[in-house]
Length: 137
Image (tube, rainbow, N blue to C red):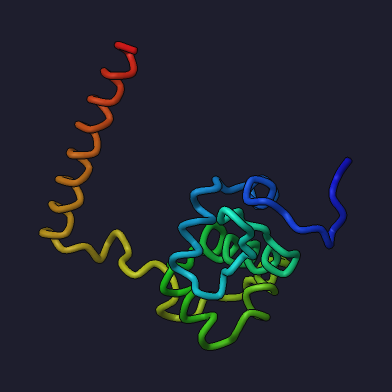
């Protein structure tokens, strides 16, 4: 039996509804002070319908509209929760200057490009090690 629209959601139900992993919701709590689900004994999270509406807006801005975390924080500070909820209903609107991707790929300096390539090499090495360990298991 499905829950009604006004029912509280557990973190797994909220994650499923928003199509994001549970750890993303926990991470967003650390980055966005306005995301505050109810917590019961043992720290179990329960998301109210208004929490889901805000999360839906955050997801739309970050995943669909290309906002950065700082961009969403600034949008909340400047325009409030109503703007985030509107984004969750599809009203993303144009991205104001400075609220999206902070450095475009063409804007990278040679040093920045080298640092990214070095980080990529480290990640590929770590992936290879993990793949090797998983093959042994």
